Image 1 (spheres, rainbow, N blue to C red):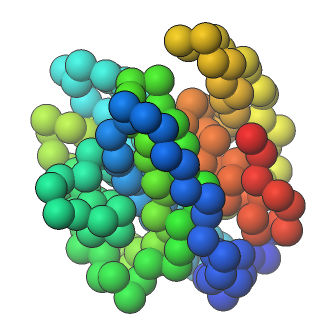
Image 2 (cartoon, rainbow, N blue to C red):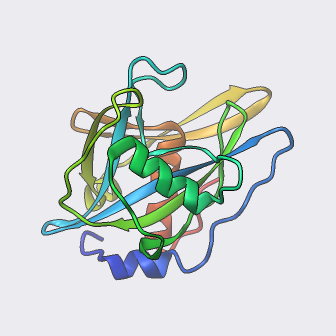
Length: 190
């Protein structure tokens, strides 16, 4: 489990994620940054700025709404650059995970990409209060809690990972779960 390499992520991402179309929902994309380090693969997370209207202070992957004319890959790469100052090239994209609905009228497509590391970050203070990395093996070893929340008559299952001082949950926790399921050869959780 903790011996995963980028090639393992590439194999796991060979099949595109399931797309979800929900009437009245806009489109968004998040970039799932996979970092290859000397001690194994890590994921890069951001902490959203305190002044944001939605999800202030929460742990997230870089991402946001698609702009006119963008596809999910273009939007995810743009958001990564805007939020943390890292340029990820299209050839570093490894694939997509299953679309995830948000309770705020968006459907987000997680785009998984290899990100050169170490690299200096340039955080946009209007969007990002901080950034940190977590080992993929440690996330896989963590037993997440599962919460059910009712929103607009729909029950949403949300995975929550607690590692040290960090809490990864909600849409971001579900994306982590999907990636780990893919790597383990399991069907993604609903």
